[in-house]
Length: 203
Image (cartoon, rainbow, N blue to C red; front, side):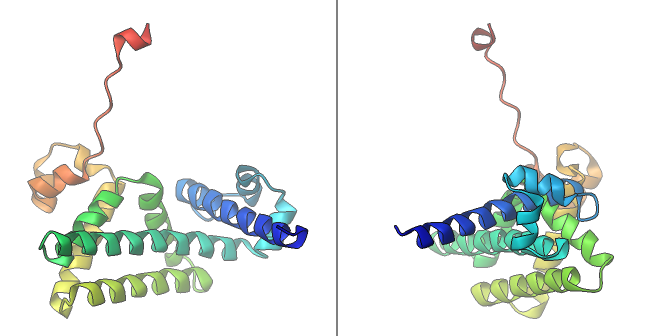
């Protein structure tokens, strides 16, 4: 590999590492609560280099939001493919894939933070959130062949799951959780049980 090619590769790798670090940081603390110095440190680069890759904090946040939606779309595609292979409705497969994805805290928090940031922004962040949601709608519509009523139900249920998972409500054995999610969905949304500590290993 030539020096020029390696330099380009390194720049691409650093950009990728920066987006991943930003996605985690923004998911934890939100757009306004996350300083770019902390993101640069997590990515192993200087703040000056961060702004060479992304001239504004808003642009970096948009890249993190887009990465979140990429993961959501990938999960939807995989869910639809599994459903077809099993002879199940692709819409059900995508719904299950989304429920599984909500157990990834970074993806879940990224989704919630994107909605919050978009609510207080009228520029590129809101545009990115709208664009990502529109692309999700188009993908689900295309893969499922669902009509408008089915799509409304799918996305409404998805939003309910997002909000309840954000509160960790499925971990609560309560009538209101079972009522809103249903017993099966509540079980699927529940966080994985902690692995018991092996006394022998602990000793």
